[in-house]
Length: 329
Image 1 (cartoon, rainbow, N blue to C red):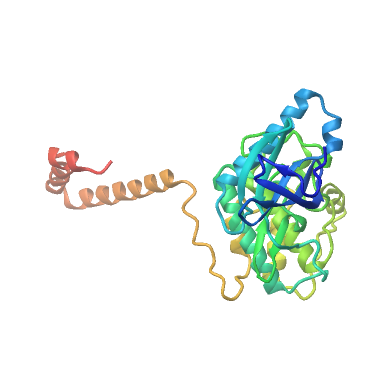
Image 2: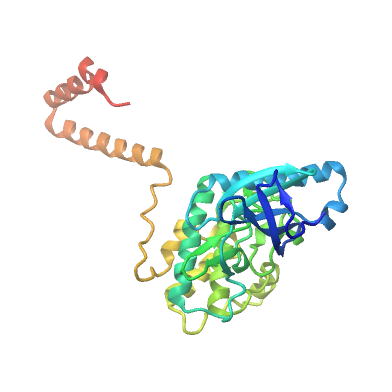
């Protein structure tokens, strides 16, 4: 049943203050945590629960608890914190940090200055790198899922309800996608979730915040592209940012930056913001083999030039027991 004001949960630990908002299957409430700050409690909507068999109800409850686990593992100042989760009345509840402020879809102005938007996008991007390091893809990046802390230029990523692992097939339906922000591959139930899907959505969010327009649906963009109609540049926005948006919103995911770090590297760095450190090599083993190969070539050249005496000296150096025993693994 719907929670009412002053109702308590979890043995009186939480007192409901009011409802906040509803999503596709969930509903959120503002609550007071006993002896602590206000929190957000998320659970499943009554109308959704009423349509479910006991098995499907258990499945959705488990999904909500898994969301809590994912959130709890992702520690970053720009990710909403998960504080608790529990089952009560055969219903799952997760308790999250209350972020006072508005989401980026509810701001009074339709567009924001480029410098300000780039700050928020970089904050969310750096938060997403943590999500991806945990092996998850958010899959629902959009202005409505980014809160702006009241009185601060600080964006916070929320709503991990449709998060998937890298190796999980999407098995998604259109209702789980967000028109204009979901990339083309999320409409294919046989695809696997990968970070480049969040790249598309983050680039689409950037486009929306700068232009005031929701980008065309990815499926419709296929037809537009056949007619050679490309995503237009945003007037008054730097060439660097426009280029990053175009590359981040490529329909073919193979043509996009494959990681959030690669996408952020395309964007101008706002004043006072430190860029992410350079990415480590993607394949350190191959790099190591390259160095070994170069060393072998140098040794071969030296041996060829200086003859047998040098060859014997090198052989003794490489194959002496002392060197082998003290070699680094």
